Image (cartoon, rainbow over the protein chains, first blue to last red):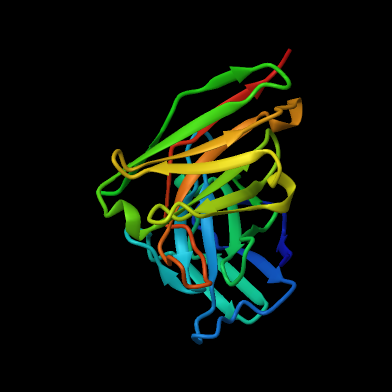
Length: 112
Length: 122
């Protein structure tokens, strides 16, 4: 199975400041079609996870442009340009290049 | 609009079985695979398996291979996940989630159900 490792596991950010989360995979997430299947989700308490970013850097419908995904092969980053109070929750990266799909451990974002 | 609506919370005793439903709407049911993912208290997201709504074939995580069955009912656009021989460690929120890629060898999740809490306690 592909192991997904996120850092940090938690971060506390002042509103208006940037935040960055790293995700590393144990194998390349580049599929034979040339696309890299790396996703980012936000899981807020009491809600179901919400897709933010797909295929490394594409924002899902309705996701604010302060969220940016980048990276390639095995090394990925989610950046929040200016953190807002509504961004609190746990962020997960997930790989979809092979079964079983696997998730990172999650990064808890809190507001200072 | 795409919706995945799951059945309500369950409380089960150890050794029992639970069957969670996931009713879909707003898209062609047979065109999108469905994953089941769970989250135990204080833990991360754990993949359990995937089912093809068109043919009904399913693939399970090795951890659950002998205890889980995923099925579907095309007449009601509903998928089901049954977990048997429950133990306290199965206490978790169980989610169904739609995969946009079908039978392509690649995977993803774009829409999630609201989750079903299953509590296993004597």
